[in-house]
Length: 412
Image 1 (cartoon, helix red, strand yellow):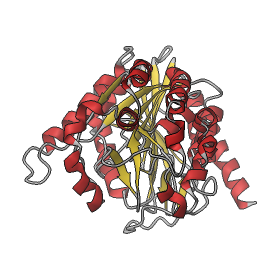
Image 2: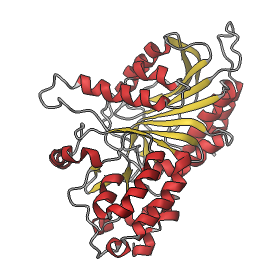
Image 3: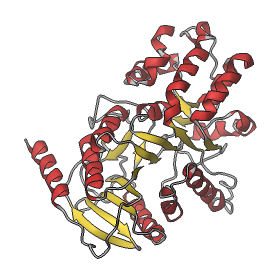
């Protein structure tokens, strides 16, 4: 009963609040962007810094460009909504404590944005921890495997925990659809690790026109929001290029004077979701040309291939890199044409900050494969994963991407 009451109160607060800057008569705003900050974890201090960057970036916006934040940090101050305008908070509204990783909270936050700040188009930035498509029991259930969020649930500002509660991607997609009333977002950007993932993008294909992020680990400092905030409101057809360029070049420049990180940045990609069903079909066809190799005892080879994450096992492989190495040129080249339509822009970095010493060692072999990387991760089954909990070879089958690829037809 408490959970239900909490959600009802949360929803009523959102529908009852009113703007406090009525002096501006904004007619038909061009775009509203919500930055959803899941900061009740060991990233909480970085949330404060990023909010300052957003305030700086907001000074470049006009009245038809509405930047909204939902902020839940590890502190006694309750979560709140606010518009960031002209370098400060306006329309600030506090709400009851909740678990940011709960899809119902994301749904209500989007409904709040759409109800109180209607616009011609919308964007969503997901801020927090993430680990790609990895799926646990469901929703906010505790598990070592997870996808997005990372909420400790205890508001401890000195916490060193990445979080106890996590949001899986399929319920995230449903939350976005419900919160937006069926209207697609112009973009969803993950300012979190491993969001440049094919299975994620495919799951979100009906709720967002573009998915933007990195398939790799993102530094704790995250995006340079002072640079990116104006880019979020660019209505040009290739708006994602500025977001990626500014993000990538910021770290390339920031690392220049480092003795250990010079030349590093982070891989970044924009995925056009309207092309993903065609890509899925083309990928299934390409895999079909090597069907015997794909079985558990087959010759499909992931050795020395570029991968973006290591969680006890190598996973999150570069889709382009792996498929090129395992298929014939005659079959691969037609697939590339389809891939390039679905992935209109990416920037590759062979080196990025990582918590994994194993990945750090293997990055040395990534540089010479730069031209063979598409900067989108994809899951490929392996007998190595039979010991994961849940078994990744089975968990991947909960994703819509697998409805086309059908890993089970190869014995998985």
